[in-house]
Image 1: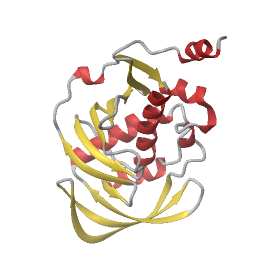
Image 2 (image 1 turned 180 degrees about the vertical axis):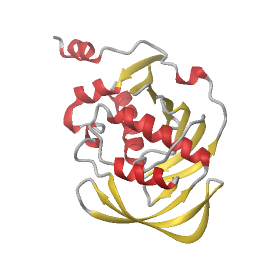
Image 3 (image 1 turned 90 degrees about the vertical axis):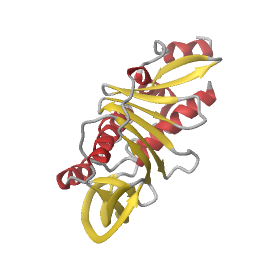
Image 4 (image 1 turned 120 degrees about the horizontal axis):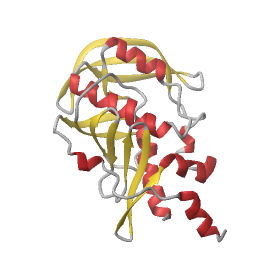
Length: 235
């Protein structure tokens, strides 16, 4: 059970920290990307709508579903699929778990103070973009600077709307992540999406392949984690 929880939390942590900048949307498909968390390999993100998405890591038995604003962890235990409410899991594990660390103390872009196009073009994951110098203020009020590759490609914008507006916000609902809305709105206003942002996010591939409904289905009734913990503690 401990390894199951760690696997689910690693997926949630990676998407929460790696997708704080994004854009606007409406389509389905699949993408693969890297985040700053080197302990987690490339993540695969599938979506049908912003309200229906899934995040997988390779060679892992766990994945995360975001359905209508709720995040669920799914894994196999003794060969059987198990579904967990990530909000309930974060609450049970307390302030020292990975999801809780995405809360008020997390450093996320709260404001973009300058977005300067360099005129230099760069292709990332087969998508043409432009290099920008980005000055921003984090959630702790510290001024920061990064280089980003941004694009107005519609599919990338659609993917990132589902990733930020769907998956990340579903995970955040139980962990207190907030503060990135100003940066998000600035990129939406400019009609831009992120192909690469510093060392925090890099798109590896993206396609508009239709996604089957079964990919987003919960394979089992969610566990009552509070009841499970009471059983473990002998109460």
